[in-house]
Length: 301
Image 1 (cartoon, helix red, strand yellow):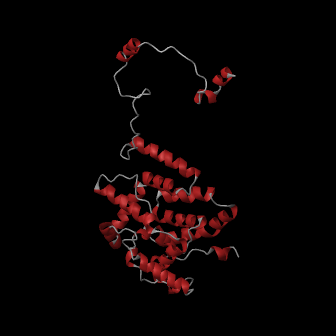
Image 2 (tube, helix red, strand yellow):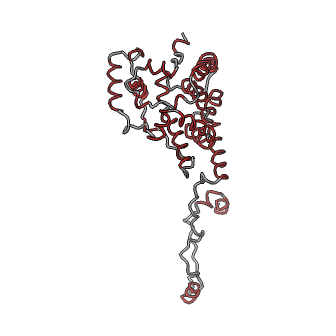
Image 3 (tube, rainbow, N blue to C red):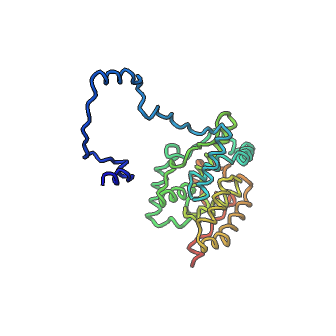
């Protein structure tokens, strides 16, 4: 029985301690000789601890390719994985960002945005006031009347309904900021990322999978960013049911193409939204040539 146990994996890992064998204790002189020849080291018997694994460098081209492959694989498996899709955009979006940079520099509000670099955070926007206004409108059942809403109220209602926090948007992680030009490109991508909920308020699209993909198609036409293209194409194929794909291709995609082309390229990023809180939602939509997205409830009746 003991031999059988000794051959088993379990007994090799958890050896029995019940079996006691008496052995002759070595003489003191022999112990002294053994200790004399023992190497004087503090290392454990399994060797020195391994150095911590170094993070991949965004400045090293080989590391950047490795980061891209890792995140692209994750995003392909799950196009709703925002971190991975965002990383793909950061690692591949330089050309599109430089195009947007030129448009912003030529636009009066765009130049101010680049110079002042506003951030969409609770500490830098009237967050509490917008939520209080939204709560009051909701209690009065006036939230469906978009003609009576300001842009700030529509944005506040969007945050209130879905429990969103402006501070939850990810920072830029994989773009170089070594030069002033690199830093400006990184800010443009951050501005795009932080303005996403403004686009929801403008279009009326909900943050459902179908609503997000419809908005991604509009963002793709308006910005040309690879992250929008990645989410719009692979997300449409992988995450939507047959019914949702029909709604996307029959209603939302034609809407996105129409609205995206009505506006000059990059218009969505040339708006200083923080100065439009008290502007009528309908007035801002008319100025930007944005028509509300189709309402899903109306399409499925």
